[in-house]
Amino acid sequence: MKRSGLSIFLASLAALVFIGLGIALQQDWRFPPNSLPWRPVELDRPPHWLAHWQMRRLHADAERCRDALTRARQTFTPLADRKSGEMCGFENVVRTERPPVPFNIAPIATCGLSAGLVWYQGRLEDIALREMGSRLVRIEQIGTYACRNVNNLESGNRSQHATANAIDIAAFHFAGGQSARVARDYGKDSPEGRFLAAAHDAACGIFNAVLGPEYNRQHADHFHFDMGPAWICR
Image (cartoon, rainbow, N blue to C red; front, side):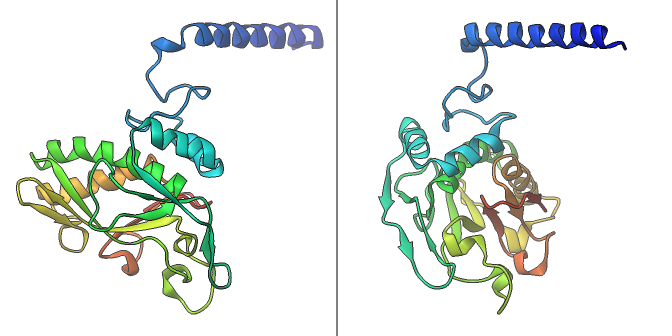
């Protein structure tokens, strides 16, 4: 393509993009919540293709993140920043008091991770009704903040737990009295096993790192979710 032809092509392409953007701006009310980058995140509505990008923005901006939690009608308490040990401590951490689904212990985690958990719990409620035929009533978490290295090794990189940017989840409990426990049910062809498989996959659409029994033996009894820099779904 000659230079003049290329210039005309690029100009036409830019014009189409500009026109498309203008139409989207004028008609953005027609698009589903969470599907346009300039609109605020709605944590009480389903995530879409922008979820990872939106989570990164919330994680990096305390005011934006707390506003998203407030608009989702979440009760939370901001905690003071803390430094404890070499490369340990946390900033922009909240304790979620009344999440959509109660935890056995109220999570203390970065605002970005807390926002991701609210989004995730909305997905879990649908999965619970589909796979278990019962409402999800409690999530059993076994830790958020801990000053330690990855996989509890004596040396190596610090875990995302060292900055309260990760959570480990061991089990899910339902209104009908059933429970789905990662150590017992993951990988089984049963309602509990199918719930856990779907819960794992749903997490991959929200959190940056999602680790479970297929990752290594250290995760044989829980799911690990974090908002760290590494992207992995195993």
